Every structure is written in C-alpha cells, then in structure tokens.
Length: 443
Image (cartoon, rainbow, N blue to C red):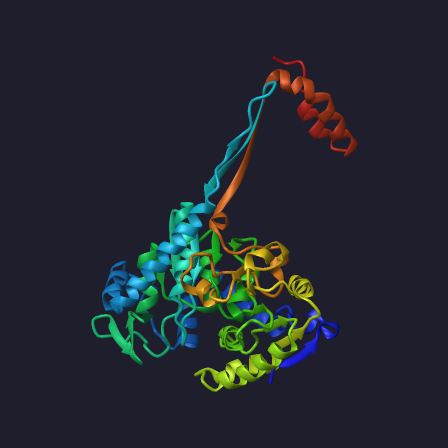
C-alpha cells in the first residue's frame, strides 16, 4: 500500500534516486562496445543470435518494408498516428531557431548560424514492447530541424525470428513485418525515417556511434532503452551526442479536496505500469483526499494487466505527501523536480508561474499525462530523476548546432589589439599575443 506522510517527514532522496549502474553492467557494456568496434558486423550477428534468438542475413530492412507495414496496420490506428504526428509537428515547428547577424559596428561583424546535425540514430525499444509513439516523438523534431538522414534501429522480435510468410507474420494478434512490429514501422513511415536496422541493445548503440560495415556512423543518438542501452549511451557520449540518460519515468500530482480521487489514482498508476521502479507521487493539502486516493489506488491496481509491476512501484516508490498549503505543495514539487507534473486544481494557469522544475506540466483536471505521451504535441522524451533542474524536453534544438562567426577589419583590430595582447600576456600565452601583435600596423 502507498505510504502517506506529512510534509515535515519528507526527504527528497527517499523518492527520486539516481540510477546507479553496477560495475558488472558497466564492464559488460564496455566489452560489447569494444567488440563491435573491433569486429563490426560479425559482433553484431553474434549478439543478435545471443540476445534476440535471431539469425539474420542482413540488418537493414528494405525501404519497401515501411510501406508494407503501413498497409498491414489497422487503418483506424494509422489515422490516429497521423493525427498525433500532425499535433507533434505543429508544436515543434514553433521551436525552430534562426541565426543572427549583429549590426556592423566600427568594422566588427559578429553572428551565429544554425546548422542541422547531418545524421541521427533513433533507438526504439523492441522485444515484448511496442512504442510507435517514441518513433514519432524522436523523428519529427529531427525532420523539422533539417537532419539529412534519420536511421531507426530496433531489435528484431525474439518470437518472430524472421519466420515470416512474404515478410509478414502475426504475433499474438499483432502484425509483424520482417521481425519488427508493423506499428513501429508504420510510425517510421509517417514520421519520415530514412533507414531501418534490426539491431538491439548496447551493441546497437555501439554500431551507431562507431559504424560497422553495414551500419553508418551517426552524429547523435536519441531514444529510450533498457539499462544496458542507457549505459551504452553514457559510454559513447563524447564520440557522438546523445539526448539524455533516462531513468525511471515518474509523475507528481498536485491536488486539493476538490479533486476527484479516482482520477488522481488513475494518473498515478499510468506511470507505475511503466516499471516497478517508477515513482508516483501525490502532494496535497487535504488529508481526506490522501486517504481516498490511497484506497482508490488499491482498487484500481486489481484492474491492471500489469498489476504486479504497478503494485511494486506503488509499494516501493509511491508516496502521498500532506502539506499545510498549496504553496508548500509547489515548494515540494520544485524540490523533487518531476518528469511529469499534473496540476489538478481549479484555475490551474494561476499556478503555472510557481513551477520552477518540471519536465512537462499538465494543467487542469482534463489533461492527464497520457495526453503528452501520445497525442497533444509536446514531446514525451523528458528529463527524469530530477534532472529537469538543469535540462529540458527533447526539441528541435537538440537536432541542430550553433556556429559563431566574427570579422574584424584592419582598423578594428588596431583599436582592440593592445587590449588583446595584454590579456594574452596576463595568461602567459606569448604565442597568442604575437598572433595579434604581428598584425598591428600592417595594411
């Protein structure tokens, strides 16, 4: 059963814990990366047989596979994905940044240009899960940014093993095309993915970061994955860019006595079913609401297919905090810095300015977190584990880079030269000073 505590008993560290990677996992991932660097595709084939129970002749799927998937997915769901894609595109187009030129002043011109990243790899989890929403959320901002080539990489289905008839099979009622859930491939087509490779795990991240005979090297890797994928992203960061190191998904709800406990419980459980380590938090100034939500969580847990996972999350990472006021509720929320923050209060916009640390904010009693997961338009790739104190949701800006430029005329350098020489000499960098002084008084 979920814990109920007073605000005076609250300790942030008991709720949001940083993901700690074991030494064994760190070394295992390092060995996988080193093997892929050394042996390329041969290592990828071995890992695919070992971890995915699949023997593949080639990793890349023909472009026609995405078209085939679009045909085999339920057309009503295709229309829903297209609506979601339209909403995501509409929101993210407002994030496009332009370069700038400062007005020339006394022979000095300064500016900044924005350039898209050339090639991006999007990792999409596979296995027993299917996340077409992740395809849309990671690919559409990259397309808007102008990325030249987007490569999607996802594990082949362990159950399929590529024993498909004409490339299409059926796994527990879900269409599969060439070993990949057709809904994921259909989303890739809708979003504009250029190439698809069937590789999973840390070895897929290594292939994207360093390249192999068949997998091209990318400049940045985005997308969620298990702890091995996250650790691989951590280890290749610096060789390539990454979006973030994601921890368990979390939610925090701020509510008062006017809020329906049934809705609060449902929203908290929507995150608990992600994984047994997903924190679900209610912060309220109403003891009565706290008790009602606790009972409602117990009732709704019994309705969930993933009850065991969600119950463990509730028991080990769920908490209800009773505060003396709504203002104190926001203070605690900002301290926790949740990935998802639901403000389930009347006149929710009156409280938006109180939010300092949150990944995405859901305002009002009819804006539950799953709206953001799938449909509304803002990105669902969000900073977790309190990292929204210093980082932001995935955006178009994540797929661009800034380049500064400057120009000084002869006269402008003469005017500034002595200052720069002095600065360089104060730092003991004589060659820097000479680079300037040798241009002094020269036409």
